[in-house]
Each structure stands twice: as structure tokens, then as C-alpha cells.
Length: 295
Image (cartoon, rainbow, N blue to C red):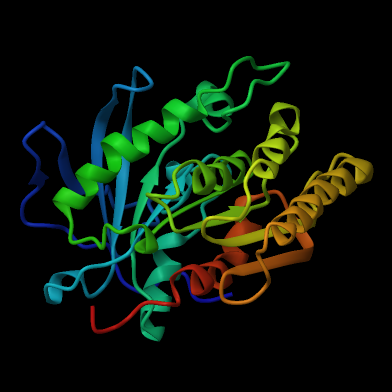
């Protein structure tokens, strides 16, 4: 696994403040924090679609301050687990450190981390009703990203706003909502990172939804571990079987492994941030590797 510490967190001279009161300030650093590179935070951003608030996080690539170049944007769920072990639930993805290292390969992007809403996470990350958790709020959550977050990010930062440069990624239920987002908003998202997706949630409604499309409207990275559910070998087999079922369905819709599709089965993979962090470099190389350095 690549080294995690590549560049210390930078402190900006001034906060980036938008007209609506959103302020982009340097992410906290110091004892206990593990952020590297330049990560900004906006506190208590209102979601009109969901009727709640949450912080937003933005990672800026190493070359951002050295010119006028514009960058692709990756929107990631469970934002509190992406950059900082201090704010994570059970560990972080090391997205910042991974991209700092990938910058040496010429792969750079802006990453927007959207923290989950705690007890509302299960409902916000699913557009389908679930027998145990009730109606899904996935439509409203994606509307929050598409109507509120993305316009603000495109306004405040030097982005490449077109769909072919806009990606969405998450794990578990975050993987479910990422694949759904690609089909639901193909005018916005050109690719999805679908990591250890929880396709079982919501009575496996994602399968009927995808079945209703003639083709897959964008590029897909999808992976799964053989040990996703450690409490039961049978449950892990079922988890794997669901992802393999989606793998077959995506191919049936015309997606083939290659430039537009990467599918990975990790024989040692478990359902946790450390394993997702381990697979992250490969996923980001696939999603972001088409960058044109002249842009």
C-alpha cells in the first residue's frame, strides 16, 4: 500500500466565503488529525431537499494553486470517513493521501466529501423502500447533490463541470446510491465508483431499476470482497452473489470490461474502510485516468 503521508495540510490565509454564507475554511489539523494536502470544510450547509444540515469537505489537488487549470470532480459519500481518522467512524479511506501520491502519476481531481446524516444514512442512501427502515430518501439526497452542492462547487472552484468529468463514488449503501445516481442523473454523472455495494437493501430494488434501462449510461468501477459479512460465511456468499448478479446485468446491458468498466473481486476483502482504502488507488486510476494534462 502506498505511503499515506505525502504533504502536510496547508493553512489558507483567508477563508473562501460565498454569498449565501457558506465559508470554505482549512480543515482542522494538529494532534489526532490525519488530513494531508489541502482539504477545506464548510460547516452546517443547509439541504433544502432533506430539511437538514451537514458539513461539506473539499480536497484540492497539489497543482491547484499553481495555475488556472480546471479539474474533474469526484463526489463521495460518507464524507467524514474519507480524509481524517479523527472524524471517522471506524477508520478512514485516506483519499487525500492516495490522491497526493497519484498526483505523481499525473492523476489529479477535486474530491467533494459529503458526510452522512447519522441515523438517516440508511434512508438517504437508498431510493427504494425497505421493510425495516421505511421509505427511502435517495431521490432527495441526490437532488441535494445535483441542485445544491454541485452548483456551489462549480461556482467556488475551478471544475470541469461537464458530465464526462463528474463522478460519484461510495461504499456499501454508498455504492448502491452511486450506481443509482449514474442511471438517475446521466446528464450530471459520467462514471460511478461502486465499492462493496449493498444491493440487498430495499428488497434488492436496484435490480429491477437497472433492468428497465436499455444500456448503462456511463463508466463503472465495481468491486466486492469475499469476506464482506464476517458474522456468517453464508451471508458473505449471498453478498458476493448479489454483486455478481449485477455484474452480469451490467454486461447484459452492453457494458464490457475495458475502458468503460472495471470489475474486481477481492478474495481477502472485508467490509471496512481499510480494505476500501487498499483498493482505492486502482479505482481512482480507472475513474480519473483519462485526464488530459493540457486542460
